[in-house]
Length: 133
Image 1 (cartoon, rainbow, N blue to C red):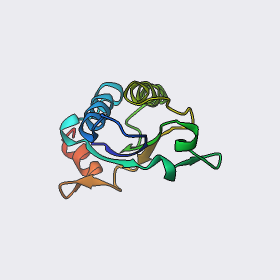
Image 2 (image 1 turned 135 degrees about the vertical axis):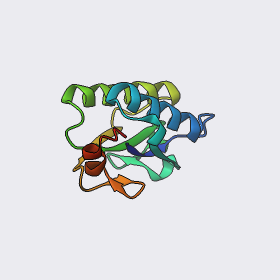
Image 3 (image 1 turned 90 degrees about the horizontal axis):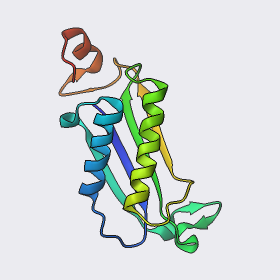
């Protein structure tokens, strides 16, 4: 059960929110072992004139930048899993978008299993009950 929040500052593109969501969902499955059926992805495109790196807009530098944040249940992934997700996310976003700035971020947040859930049940409850999702 991951939740992904995605912000992308890019000039006009043919890449859709659906394509980004599908790619990130697949990476969460492949690199982190998450259940794709319950992955929630929120994708927002931002005007490159409103995204700044070093006080210069990415429109000015003719770059694309992004921020991907994924919330996962604490202690369910290793450092290697997380590093693989970060690397693959950057590589895939670089294939989707032109001139991706190295100052594009991927953040994995470990959330305590008793502090979040879905369908009215915490992840802790799901673990105890044997519901892997």
